[in-house]
Image (cartoon, rainbow over all chains, first blue to last red; front, side, top):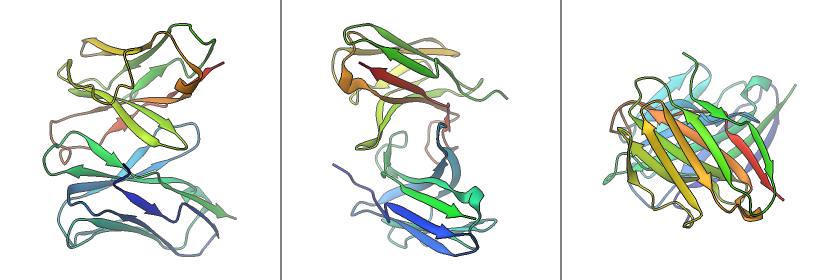
Length: 112
Length: 116
């Protein structure tokens, strides 16, 4: 059962455009993490959000945790080719802080 | 910091053969995780250890899979006998702390396994 739905599945844009990707669930999570994975490598942690409504910024990336802690979004401003990769979200259930539930990811291609 | 080190990076083996994947976690990290990644199913947790003790192996597909962590600096994932459907990228990840909100996972570069 896939508990975290990520959309869109694929996204191809031109350098300089803005974009938003989404991570949605019917379940409540105690925290949610975003990772970026490049081809041939493992995922790399970008951010962890914990509080409902929380907004975190990482340079041109803005992450938001939904008020009900069931969803999250990642907004990239003025995308660069270096932003290309697979963006994964992973949520931690309230009852078990070690196991994460993973989405299938959004594959982003930023063309120069 | 060398990060999480996995070996081999690529493994091609024939159906029925034994395969052993290796992982060296980051020094000082007390939790270790084995994941499998495929296009269809994404990242699937196979097993995780805390302080070298297996905590949850409910994700291990079947008895052909086994994992060990004899000490804090080494873990293995073994598949015996291997089958074509085991073909995937296998990741090892480590983390400091017991709570997910303590620190994020650090992943290795993975082992791409192909069983023919």
